[in-house]
Length: 202
Image 1 (spheres, one colour):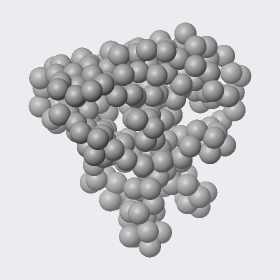
Image 2 (tube, helix red, strand yellow):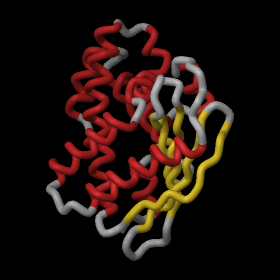
Image 3 (cartoon, rainbow, N blue to C red):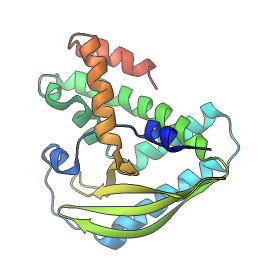
Image 4 (tube, one colour):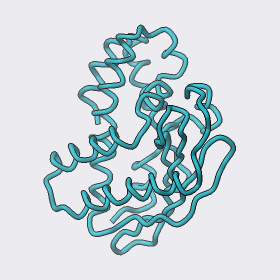
């Protein structure tokens, strides 16, 4: 069972969609409501399949990493979680950080998605918001009132991908920017030390 506190822990703090737009490469916008919904239908279908698989936590996490790799704009999410510090990172550091962040996000949110075992996520509707689409879905957990999950989808990377996920209004981007910022502060701004920490976190 996931109470309101554990839901907020699931995605407790990230950048707003408006703030992250400057970090996404501009491209010809061809994404439609139907395209955004199709992407999230696929994401939700794969998440529900993993939830119902009965696999071990480690096996589920590997599956969730594949889902993030396939459907999330990890490059944009990772870079945005670094905030202004991304501008002083070398290309090699950004690449290493992005790879480490992909594993971190899969471990962290894979463990949270395990709390959905016995439940399901349903896609309800989609709407265009400025330059991206917001796909609204509902999570149904055993013994708990349904709650809202929103996926923010853009094609500005050159592919249809989600760049944020909000659970009851709590943004993954904003949450992870706060978490990563705290980790970087702890290492006194040392990006290489941060990368080592992120490899083990989650």
